[in-house]
Image (spheres, rainbow, N blue to C red):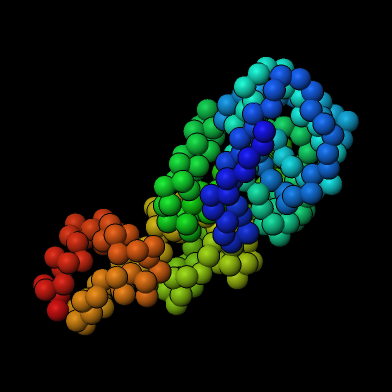
Length: 268
């Protein structure tokens, strides 16, 4: 009656498609033993009893999962429900939630734009889009949802001045220039900030996301390798951290308007 499809797990975050086909009626009590998570409801309706509190969930709300909670799910309608779980390590929760490794209990509103972004995130993960980009989107979405519970806590630690924001963005660019494989959580830890602050500040300063900047740098290394006579595109893609040769071709074409194959003879 309950199935989990783990789509992506990387850098302290996981995205899962959870399908419940519980019949109409009350469920059984259980203790949640998984990691902290934010649950987005895509379809259906259910009543969740968490530590004695009763909450009605539908696709306009998300809820949090806290290790050790006593839970029961009742279904007022037949057909069950479909949800998306975004689970995080306690360390990542602390980075998003002002230093506290425990998510706030209860429900969180998901306005239309947030619900759409959650569905786009799920689609990107299912397609196998750049995993660094998917992780960055998941972190940004999680912070956006948590702001409904306490915007001041989520905003704690954000750089206050334009000079501080510029230094933060430059620090990320400097680190990526040395190693494009640095993940968003790793960059944030090195720069002593939270991943969502770093993502927002960088996007505002550069006009594109950290994951996009990473791909732009990799594309330029690819062009340099092509100019040096490297003509094995599959090996080049693997060396530079692209998902495959097709991914390399897409990114280089986006950056230059031409494919690596077309550029190979012109650059060499």
